[in-house]
Image (cartoon, rainbow, N blue to C red; front, side, top):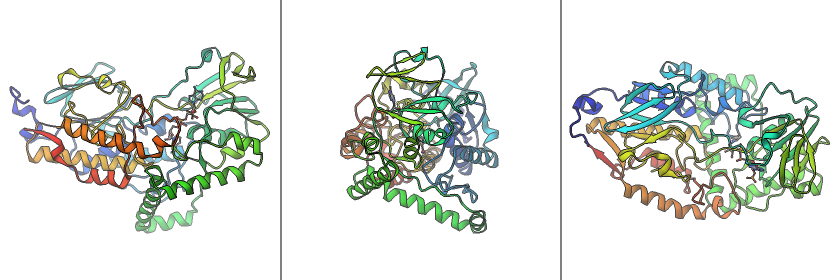
Length: 497
Ligand code: NAP
C-alpha cells in the first residue's frame, strides 16, 4: 500500500501529528475534539455545515423540544454541569451547554463554520477532502461525526405542495408563523410530535393530530431542580458524578434491558404505559384509538406526560382515518372528510439510513459508500468499514445502542478511535482497516441476534428498520457494546505498515 509513497507522507513514519478531519460540530464532533486533544492529538479541523455548533440541538427548535434522557447523564463525562434547571433538559438549555463546552474546551478554534463537505476520497495514505466551496485539503484520518437523524423526511402525500397555509417539517420550524388561535394540523405521533402537541395545544384554536400508528407512551417524571440542590451539586462535584452513574445504571437495567429481551422489564414498561393512558384519557373510545397493538419498545418508547392530556382538551382532535390527500384548504382523509387547517406541521421523522451521506465518500478501489450501503448501512462495531482505511464513524450504523445517552456511546467510540491512533503511532502504521471477514462475522451475528429483540419481534414498523428489513441497531446488551469499545480487538483489523 505504501509503495512509492514518501515516508514523510505517513504521519506515524514521519513522527508527526496526524492531520485529522472531523465532519460535524454537534455533540459527537465536540466530544471528539476534546477527547482527542486530551490524548495528545491536536491537529484537528472540524468542518461544520452551519454557522453554530450543537448539531441536532441547533437544527431542532420546535416548541416543547426536550430530551427524555436525564440531564445529569445527558452530559459529557468531562464536563458535568451542576446547574441543569430540570431533570430532563430542554432543547435551548442543551444547545447552550454544547456551546459552553465547545467554548470552554477550545473546540471553537478548530471549527470551520459554513463549510459543508461534498466529497471524501481515499488516495492512500491520505483522504482528500473537498468542501462545497471547492476547497481541497488532505488529511491522514477522517472522523465522521455527522449524527444519525439529520435528514428530515417529507412524506410523499398527494397534494402536499398545494397546501395554501404554512407548512414545515418539525426540524425546520418556521418561527415567523404565529400559532395563536390557528387551526393547526400535525402529521405524526412520534417523540417529536408528542412534545410539540403538549407544548402548543393551549394556544392554538384547533389541533388536528393525524395518527397513523399509536405509540407506546410512558410518563416523563420531569422535575425542576432547586437552586439549593444545584448549589450542593456545585459544592460537591462527586455528587454530579454519582448522579451521572446513577441515571446511567438505572436506564441500562430498565429501559435498555427491555429492548434486548428482559421480559420482566418489558411487561413493567407495558403496564406503566397503559396506566398512564388510562389515567390521562377518561374517554374510552379515544383511549382505544391510542392503544398500540404491538409490543412496547418495538418502536422508540416515548416519554411524555402532556401529550395525552393535550388530546383530551376540547380543541384537540385525534384523526386516525388515513390521509387521502392534502388540498389547499387542509387534509382530506379516506372517509372524505376535509380537516380545514391554517398550518400543517410534518413531524414525520428522518432518513435514518443517511449517516454521513449525502457527502460522497469514496474508499479503496473507488468504491462509493452510498453504493456499498445501498439503503442498508452497516459498519464494523458501528465505527469502521472494510475498504475505508483510517475512516471512523461516531454514531455510525447500529449505533443507537439500547437507548443509552448518545453522549456516553460517542465518548466510548472516540476512546476506541484513540486506541487505533495510538496503535498506529506505536507500530508506525500507515493504515488501519477492518478485515472483511471480521466485518462479515460481526454483522451476521448481529443479524441473527436482532431477530430476538422486540425491535424485530414486536410487530411494528419503525425508523429502526432499513431497506434490508431488519432493525439497524445493536442487538446485545448495551454494557457489552461499551466493553467492546473499551477493549479493541486488533486481530479484527488489517494493520498496514
Ligand atoms: P418518528 O419517530 O419517525 O415518527 C414519525 C411519525 O410520523 C410517526 O408517527 C409516523 O407514523 C408518522 N408518519 C411518517 N410518515 C407518515 C405519513 N406518510 N403519513 C402519516 N404519518 C406518517 O420521528 P420523530 O418523532 O421525529 O422521532 C425520531 C426519533 O428522534 C425518535 O425515535 C427519537 O429517537 C428521537 N427523538 C428523541 C427525543 C428525545 O426526547 N430524546 C425527542 C424527539 C425525537 P408511524 O408510526 O405509523 O410510522
